Length: 285
Image (cartoon, rainbow, N blue to C red; front, side, top):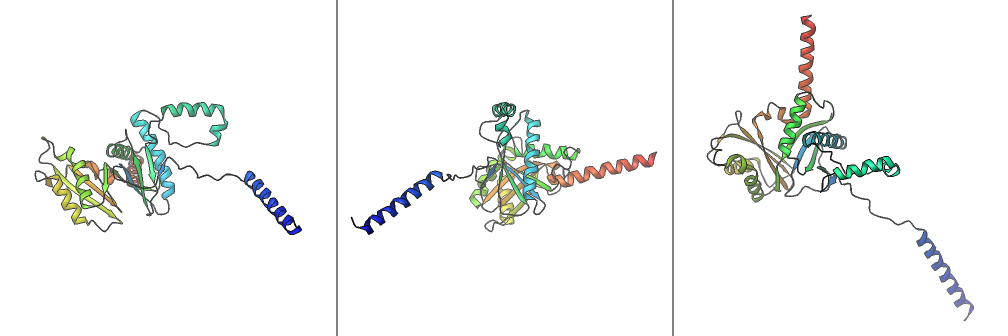
C-alpha cells in the first residue's frame, strides 16, 4: 500500500469515528405532544359552542372560557372533569401524584368535555363539546347565572356565546341534513303544530350559501304548520356558517331577555341594576 492510500484510509476512519461519536451524543428530536384541549379543525358530526371576543384577546378568552366551562360543568353534572394537562410539579411531588391519580379516575372516558379549535379568524372562538354537555341547555344555564350576577368579570373579553347542536358541511345538501336533524324534535312531533318561530343566520368566510338561501331552506324544513314571527317567536333557530361548516341549534323565547347570550351585556346589565338599587337605597335614607 502506498503512502497516499494509507493517508486516505486514515482520514476516512477519523471521519467515521467522529460521526459515530456525534450520533451517540446527539439528542433525539421528537414531535411535541399535541395539547388534548385543542383541536385543529371543525368537522361534520361535531357539536359545540361558538364565542366572540374582543380583538387580540382570543388566547386570553380561550383560557378564561375553558376554566368557566369546566367549573360550570362540574356544578351542573356533579363531577370534576379534567382538561388533560400535566405539570412538572405533579410529577415531582408525591401528594400531587396521588391527587392526580384520583383525578384520573374521575376523568371521563374519551378526553376533555371542552376542546378549543384554533381558528384563523379574529374575535371568533369555538369549543367542541361532548356528553354530558348539551350545548343549548349548557349555554342557557350559564347565561342565566350571568343574569343573576354569578361569575362576573370571569371572562372580561368574551361577548356572545352561540350553542350548536349539530354540524354538517356548508353546502345546500349539508344545510338540509343538519336542518332535518336539529329541527325534528321541536317542529315535527304530533303535538308540536302551530309554533311561532324565527331564523337568525350568521355567515362568515363562505360564498356558497347566501342568507336568503339559508332562511328559505330552513323555513321549508320547519314545515307549513308553523308560523314565522320575528318578535313573538316561541322558538328561535340559530344558523352559524363558518367556512365549509354549517351548524344549527334551537333556543327558547328568552333569548332576547338573556341579551342574545352575550355574557358582557348580561354582566353590564346586572351591574347597572345593582348601581340603581344602591342609588335608590341611598336616596331613601
